[in-house]
Image (cartoon, rainbow, N blue to C red; front, side):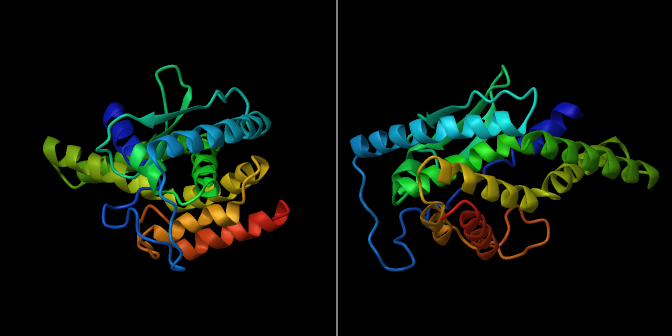
Length: 235
């Protein structure tokens, strides 16, 4: 069951994904987005990565103990991969921040790219993958126990475990996103980029509102966190 729960938890870590119909949409203010050539996109990604990585490492080492802070930032080689960025761990426990090529092409400026990097790094620094897996395991155990008490057979208990894992993994996902937005703002600013400009990326994310068991908080709440934190760090 542990492997099943862990898979369900980690499968929910796609963080800043845009649906196909939203990718490439002009900003809400009507301004036109720059069109990056592949060479320009690669250069911008490299420059931002070099600026953000040391600041993320500093924050990680300052805020954690016995945590691997050797961030690796990579590009998903699949050209068909949707617009997305997410944090994961490799086999050695090293934090990996993965960006799809379409994600890099979608950002409108280096500040947005830096903000997304800072946000994903913050997930690792704040231990969100482990906390999400723990919540998923707890949810699976509770739902399985309820199914057993009510006389469920083996299949019913297994189904209850799956549902419980999803419910558990999502139980604090909104809080995790806001925590990552706050620390991501600090990392972005210390890397020399403007987090308020970077947070304009949210204008192209469909607003999830405040849905029960939704994985992301309302966009307005996220922007407010960025603005408040930016003021604290001098932006």
